[in-house]
Image (cartoon, rainbow, N blue to C red; front, side, top):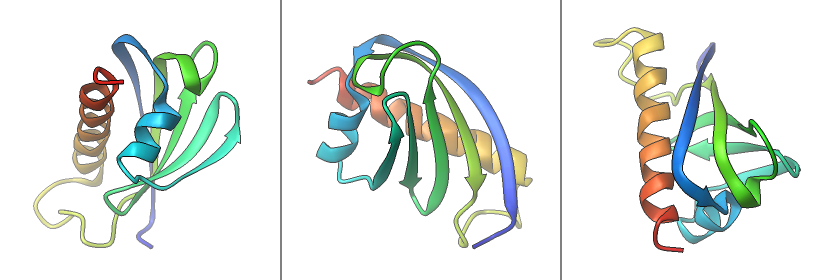
Length: 102
């Protein structure tokens, strides 16, 4: 594992989604911590996903924190913060796009 990054961003989705169903369908590994929080392994990174209001099965707004970047992250060409922000954006776009097809 690389060193801890701890970059957080707020994300809003165009409509409510069941993020646990989306993650399962995409075969993205995650661990339910409780009904409003999950630890997600996305592209080799460790993310903390928390619902800002309500449950992960009815997600409208989330706070996503990158705890750890993947070993093969682009740390040589980007700062860790830039890489973490890009990772969060990729994750939220993928979840949003798949969530619209539920």
